[in-house]
Length: 580
Image (cartoon, rainbow, N blue to C red; front, side, top):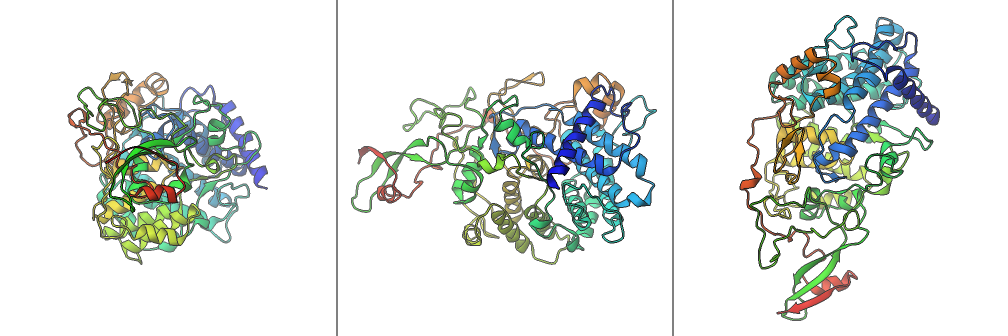
């Protein structure tokens, strides 16, 4: 049955594209269907949505998350999100609701269609800022007007509440071709409420009163939220051509612009892994095909000598860029050549690559996980918004759920949780990033702990959510890209994490100029990647030209222990260059 659903989804996505490839505006569709059952349309909508989300992860958002590094750059641009969401997804759900919205025999399926629309709009407003929303689908409107962020978030919270209430678990209509939950209406209710919680937490800065009310309401009825990984919303892929995961199509089969590029671990995530002996490093990534050799100073349990040794390390993360800013001087006794750390590493030979299971043809895409819900509840509880458990109980439940999701044991989770910085209420000392100017120490601040674990949990499908979390919290100090060149017409020495995507020029500035001008007015700034959205708190970006880095390899040293005998015990071959 699952294969039939996937095939139908692929077929419908092809039909949808064929009907809308010449679609001149997002608010009209001369090729839209006039008669079609939701069973025939919604699977294709889901597939179109998730396929595009996977492509955007590969091309853009994995970079933004600092969890995975496909290209080492902050690529910026629409990347097809706008047209796919408005034409191939929202265009079809809008038409379905026009056909069946007033028919009570379709109430459950219309609620599902609306939940999916809310999921898409949350992605769009979190990507661009103001977007077409309330005027979507108006056939007599020559200019598609935009709505501001606050209006959209307020509406989404209201819609998700209504959708959850509208679904009947018994006595309602069924969704026989459901590729997300196999027709289980109770799980659609949990997804709607969990998405409502995510959305409310997102808009706390710009809508504090509205978001607080929604969070409290959801937390007062926790049984209506995702309560285990059995409730996780996910799209299952198949192995037949056309039904395969885009991660596999793009990265294994090599049909994308990346060719056969292999995504690798970010060195920023790598530094956190190393700082806290995190066993997830092996669950997320393979060891490097050709291990990188480091130089280290080790002592001995048998002599008083110090040994300068060279030996291979199993994992390594890729820096955002190997370029130096003009005033950066890394010259030191250990780095007389003034070169960047690991500048001789090669992709993907010396870096840790994605576990093959993550790019398998039929690997599901996870829209949300139980672990994320635990971390969201931990934040809500810590801020006094309710909950049956204490904040630390939710926090530990999230770590346990994430470890279990990746096949790690509860014993491993317990050992990890007992470390300073991970343990609730404690501060942990982390390593410096390889250029020394960023440190991965975790403060005693428990909210920061929750957000760090939530960020790690977004590997690997949650590229957008990781980007969203960082923008709304500014919790992580992320390294810049130091060789961005010209980005959307502006030449700069370095680039910090982008705040948004620019609007697609050919679609909006050219085809919908009045709507585009309205969008810029609501945005309150230029159509640029670092024009901030309303969800972001006030902060001062770091001027990296005024930061003095220093050469620091301590985060990879003493990998097997402080003594040369530790290398022997681990079976590691090494070379001694000198002793003292």
